[in-house]
Length: 181
Image 1: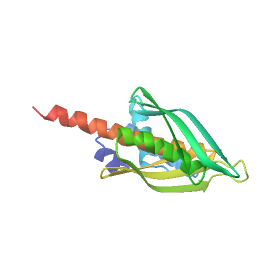
Image 2 (image 1 turned 45 degrees about the vertical axis):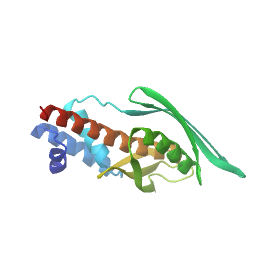
Image 3 (image 1 turned 120 degrees about the vertical axis):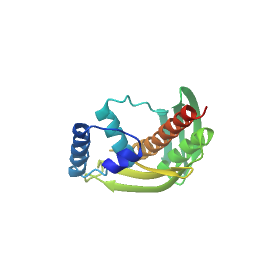
Image 4 (image 1 turned 135 degrees about the vertical axis):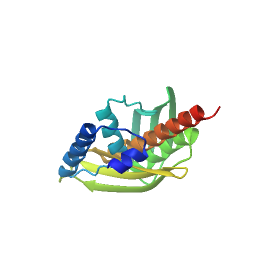
């Protein structure tokens, strides 16, 4: 954990590092996969860094059914600007992710590399955890979402990954501009 946090140039005291480790362990003990985005969010929360999300879900509508092409529309706020987009897919999750990807293309070349689902609880009202690997350029980040609704868990995971990549890219640009004369 400490090595990864250092690679992100996050400087934590030993006390803060211990708190991050305890929070990660607590989540792991509950059966939750702790992703890169989760770890960064935990570390920044422990450090008191305000969580700015460059991309926020404002609205999601999904239509699916028998003899209906699964369709989703999303309203996202990207760096303060609202964007509305819609898309179809082979199912409701695919349609929702495709709509978000359309918005994402306006911001950066973002790709969904991997998508995994696991049930945390049982039954038809089970809480599911969705873990995604999202790529922007040569950087890949893992993010997750957990909800009772698989579509919302998927959207949460994907947006969390996109936000983490955009935040990292923004920090790298600011760092580079400070170094140039």
